[in-house]
Length: 232
Figure 1: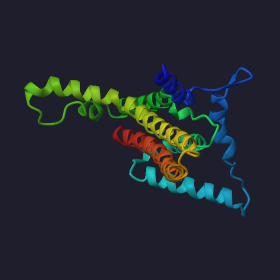
Figure 2: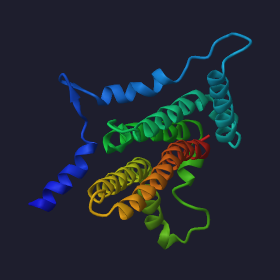
Figure 3: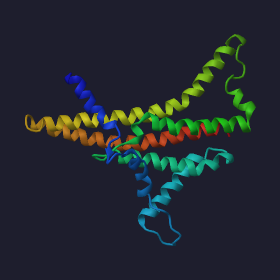
């Protein structure tokens, strides 16, 4: 019973809290957009807008330089997705906050439509090349049915891998932070030295999770751009 209660306490942080009957997940979803300033038309801008412009230009150049010209139409939506995921991942590391990207339903809700759009673009613009991905050239006749089944399964696994990767990495990091912070507090009076060492570990883990939050947002968008590159 004690183990079950502890497990429920650990995973309760991933349940969307309510305030006055309103799920706070909606506030968490809108928070990144309110914190990102709107660019202005002035010649001289402040440091925050300059940093925003530099980030958008650098990210767009990094992601879309390998893509063909038709794929550049996705610049706005993928850049917005990167800012959205980055904001939610980083804000979720603050105390007493909720991280929507730890929910598999949200991540799949982002991954499946965007992946399906890239596949639809491929079948519409280059049907032969898209169908050719299911069967590599020079495949022996006996292996043709097996390879077609394997390639079809791998195609449909892609959005699942996108959503599960983001969910698993963020969930594991939040659980580790929860466990180490609880251990630090529990050992504070019984063993101050061990508690101090645990606190240092917690600080290092938090820095690592900040890097993981940024990397996972980038990987999510990068994989979508690679899927788009295959189909354009």
